[in-house]
Structures are given as structure tokens and as C-alpha cells.
Length: 259
Image (cartoon, rainbow, N blue to C red; front, side):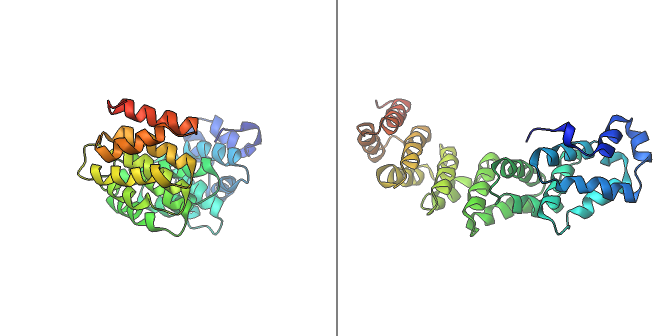
């Protein structure tokens, strides 16, 4: 999300230009409530710009910090996310930010989802209960949320992520299967690498989505398992009429020293 200074609220812009202590002295409870409303801006660029400006002020202003924290429980989804994003930028993120991050992980807006994933990982590194919640959410009814939580576990190098990825390689949603492949690639050298390679090989052979089959070929090259079944699946794919799939399979064979 890029910034858009010309669209930000002028009182907020004015305060952001002042020395921090001077700005803080001007923010009473009513002013804080007014400033925080900018965190619900309809346009993503305006919302992020407001969040970045407020993040630079909250440590020095008790009324503003209280107003942003109160906004975590606001009825407006955009305001809840804007408040969580702001606090995640300004302070060490606590588990109170997790509910807003979680709901944002299921949104259609990809930029906001990835910002929420980054925040979720920051929280999980400090709070094990949030890491456990990410693991639980791979069973979410939302395919988008399943996918994003799996990417979070991958980025956290969570020790349970490879085994969880195996389960999601059979997910009905192609996007989730792609996330599972990206996570499964981290199984190299783990106790589940052979099981992972077998499941990935099944996708390479038979997945209905060609993009998933290409990703499966690339993943096999990263896993390091050069068993006969894996090599046979890759050699078959290397002869595919689809040039991208054939190229991915040849690259995997090269990576395994079996071209």
C-alpha cells in the first residue's frame, strides 16, 4: 500500500510535522477520536498513510494511544484493521492485535492480506498462543484464510508446517494447494520428506490445475528426494506438451542430479 499525502486529513498532517512532544500536547481525547477516524478511510492508500502518521505519534500521546486501542473493538472492520496495523507499526505487537489480523487474512484485497500476514507473524514470534491459533486456522471454512495462515507458518519456519502442508495438498482449492506446495518445499531434510514427496508427486501426475502441476514439479526439485517414483513422475512431466510444465520438470531433474 503506497502513501497518498495529499488525501490525508489536514489536522493529522499538521500534527505530524510538529516536534513529537509539541504534537502530543495538542492531542486531547476529542482530537484523538477525530484523528483515529482516518484509520477507516475507504481507500487503502489513505488508510495506510493515516496509520503511518498516527504510528509516529501514539507513543507520546496517551489519549491517542487509548483511542487507537479502543478502535480495535470498533464495529467497522476497516477501522479495526487500521488500528491493528497502526499499533503493529508503533509498538511491539501483542495478542490483542490478532483478531483484526485474522479477519483481514480472509479479505479479497491481496495487499491488505499480506500486510495482515506480516503482522500475524510479528505477533506469533512473541506470543506462542497466536502461533497455535495459526495452526488451528488451516481448518478454517475460508480457503483464503487457510492459504494465508499456511503461508504465515511457512514464513515462521514453524516445525509443524511441513506436516500440515501435506494435509492441505489435497485441499479442494487450487490456491490452498499452491500454498501447501510452497510450504512443503521446506520439508527437505525433515522426517516427513518422503511422505511429502509422495503427496507432491500425486499432484504432479494428476492435479486438474496446470499451475499446481508446474509448482509440484518445482517443489520436487527442492525436496531433494530422488526416489524412483519421484524421478519417474518428473520424467513423465518433462515430456509434457505444456512447455512450462516440461521446463519445470526438467529443472527439478537437474536439481536432483538426474537430468
